[in-house]
Image (cartoon, helix red, strand yellow):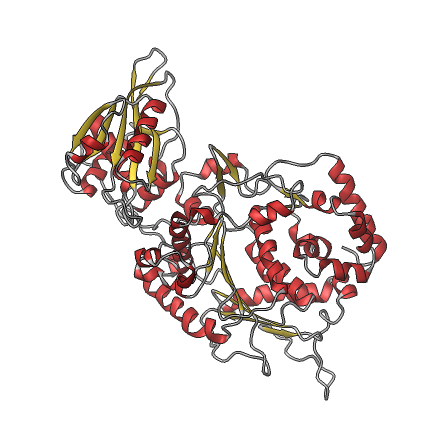
Length: 584
């Protein structure tokens, strides 16, 4: 954008005219709608330098729209913001307030790959903080030094070429010059220092950082952007070393610094994956915590069209403040695996944004202008989708189900015999296993005859006590899908399940699972590979467990489906070949 006041006013009028043309879709925020909705006095102030500086001081979104609009404009000219971007703006507003406690502000944002994490967290928000003096010293880390330096170069290019920034924030855009020699201080690939006192240092995650400071100043903003390599160049042992560097060398640089992680998972058990797992477990314990966008939606009602998000496991998830002193009890902390507790110990608040958000019975894309639901559904059955867009990684060397084994479709003539399968959890404590439930039906052809295929119509896991709550859930599912038989794996609990399911509108069949789960999965996989088992929709939990099997923490849903498939089709005559695939 040009820098003179007349151009600013012209730009705002153009954005307002675009708004009146009705170029809007639901579930998103358009930049022109946001700008056109600004009060007249704000628009008037944006025509002067003093007004722009004052109006953007506590508003990072307005700052981005005025000074860095080209960075939030797509190749097609689309200017829109996703839930994730709005959450970042909401979070960044806290930067104008001082930190008063140790480790007070540590946040992790887990979002799909190519979702704008680096643009916002390495450029837009630090630029806003630097321009207004909210941030004095940024220390930014990426997986490699070269990656971090590229981000810094993008930041520096804006300082050197952005006329609007130069006109309104001249000292920010001017390098710090030495008193004795008229030369810039610290203008290098990995460090810049500006005339207004702002400094930015970019490092690789394994760089030497102990005691990092400029004069007496330590970093007051520590950024981590994709600090882990791809799975092919990463291992469990390397992830452990990287976490050690993070906890023992980087975070101690300044316990009063704001800390921000932005990333996408790269392998099961990676640092970012551990954060995601903690966030989902914490959401189960504290469903009342809600999601990070609630305040933003309330304050910007009428601008943001997404409506309210319900508390669903695939809505944007934010953990409550995670210090153990603030938890209602220590039960949650104790229930975590020991290698996950560091997230709580370090007081890191995790915000998880899957690419598909569920609102009641409907689904929508996190960023419809970038990822259409049509596109997402076309790749939803793949490992790449699970890892890069849902941040639920599956090991590349999985030996059982592959992408091609999952077929999506429905029978022409409806459904015949229908079975509901329960793989129950026995204990009632929150740290108990999930109960896996699946509904499988025989398909019918156009003449109402069996089409020789099974259709998985429902496959979910539930944290539900083995009593009236479970009975009510099963009864409702029986009525919804027309299941006439309920099959329960009774290895644990035995005849107790007869009393639990007494009164359900279906015949109860208790069976003890025989043989290893791997053997049963092998038999079920054979029917999948022969095209005899289809899914009627996208069951993300089931597919994640299938792709990870047998190296999966929870196998309740895939176990329920395997039991149902074998109930209908029995043991296959030909043993399926299980292979381990190696990827370069």
